[in-house]
Amino acid sequence: MVCLRCKMVVKEELSKLGYHYISVELGEAELIEKISIEHHEQLRIALLKSGLELMDDKKSILIQKIKNVIIDLVHNSEEPLTVNFSEYLSQKLNYDYTYLANLFSEVQGTTIEKFLIAHKIERVKELLVYNEFNLTEIAYRMHYSSVAHLSAQFKKVTGLTPSHFKQLKNKRRSMLDEI
Image (cartoon, rainbow, N blue to C red; front, side, top):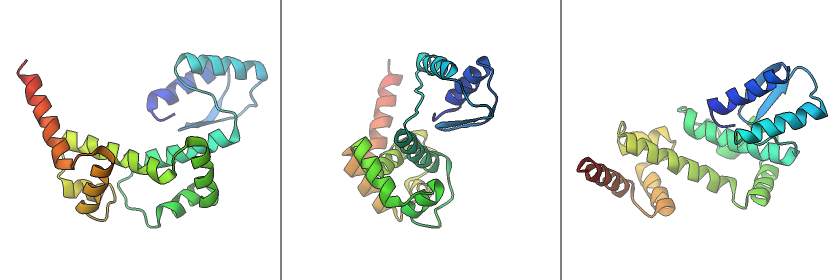
């Protein structure tokens, strides 16, 4: 679950089944009662209808938690990390980073680092499109050591420089205005 709507759907479906939850967070729900097998299946079907998946496999749940930590860090945190990312992830999930990295790569077919970078670049694109911040401010907000580092990583992922990406967006917008 990566959005408020997802959390609302889960809360609603749990309530329909008569369950009380302690919390519904990104990727997990903590219930007061133990869920019956019958209700578990009903919940699974109801969530599928809403485009959500109920995960039972401990590895899948851990993978989702890794993704949620990364998404939360990239999209919701403006504070720079006081430790390196691997240590941060280990502390958040209470697992050895090497285990997390190996599991993630095995299941997802990509590394945690590439997943993190992809999300950071997507967030940078959003910030460029919103046009609220200049590139220096974006680099700072996204915890890059410099604008040069951000630009190099952006170009490596997208094939474009941030400036060229922004020009394309502006050009497309002006073409739409002519219609």
